[in-house]
Amino acid sequence: MSQLSHVDSNGQAHMVDISDKSNTTREAVAEGHITMLPETLKLIMEGGHAKGDVFATARIAGIQAAKKCSDLIPLCHPLALTKVTVELTPEPEHNRVVVQALCKLNGKTGVEMEALTSVSVAALTVYDMCKAVDKTMCINNVRVLKKHGGKSGDWQAT
Image (cartoon, rainbow, N blue to C red; front, side, top):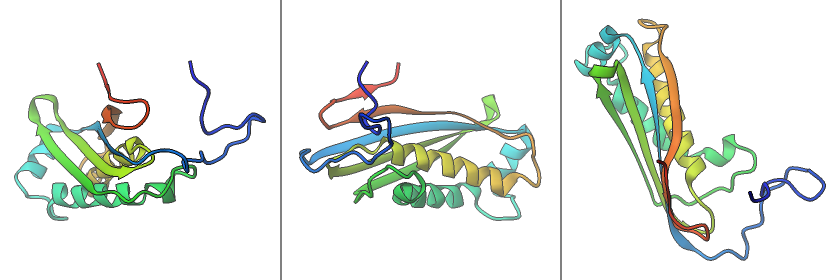
């Protein structure tokens, strides 16, 4: 197992120096689920929510979150993202919404944290908009599905 990259030889947290890394196209996809009561999901899907379009608001929040990741996570580098997509897919058979984000750039460091932050904030936005009608909602299974680019190469969850 490799050493933690954000900890120096004295055990102190630090930002990794990426100065000498090559620019490559990097992409990451993350996913998460938000489970809810069937009635809540139906309300969202039918567009009957008093606060408006839940998925559109969550999508915008997820995109904004990816762009602000380095403001939220102290050791993340600020990145010039070239693409962020956020998809929210209702799965009535599981009483949940699947949130998936893709982040991409041409740069020196990966975009996994941006994709994870995007998914998390999009799911939190769904929760925020629906909490008045459903306090049972649960955000879970937030994880990286795949990544591309960089020195470590491609990776995909099994």
